[in-house]
Image (cartoon, one colour):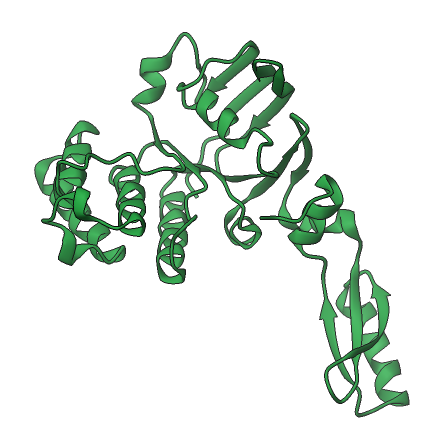
Length: 292
């Protein structure tokens, strides 16, 4: 990935409240370029943080910089370098799907030829080609969501914010978005996404953060977060697939092979699986709640 070493996002002592509800409580965060996922229960402040970083919502105190620019003093510059897809579709219902894409491509400075090619590719990838000439007002909710995501991807900005991007998408469209995120990252575009789908964070993110109680309570790779729950286990199954025993292991090939050799000597027909902690278990341990 063609990333630079400069910080992508820098947040120091960030606070934000709505009335008596303090959503962000002195948040500190420094992220390098890459793909980052923000997890947290509903109401944890994920969307609030995205809105502050994308210059849509002012913070109360502290400081926040995106791509080296201050979110208060350099709003226009930041807006020209980022793209944002919120939780709700924000496309122009009076235009067709193709017109929305062409308009955004030109606004981002793409040539007519590049805009047309990129729009055609995205319409095809998100299965919207047949509806490309129809007004968005005739689209279903799922179609609008796919178009909204396609619009945010039309250019290749330095940073894309995706707030709950795959909510409401079918499995095929979700995989299409994952592929597109991976391709963009390979070209040097950074991604900051919030998600309730823990598999999404596990598959895509270089770094995962968990926001709870107004602060980041965990930060690391998927493997590092899973290690907080515990090591791997070798599960022993009966003939019906039921787990009849577990053996704790650190997960190294040598240690696992030793346990398996001992099991094979004692019970040669036994069925086993090696199981690692999941992000769901991490999320539950950190927040006391199951992922939505």
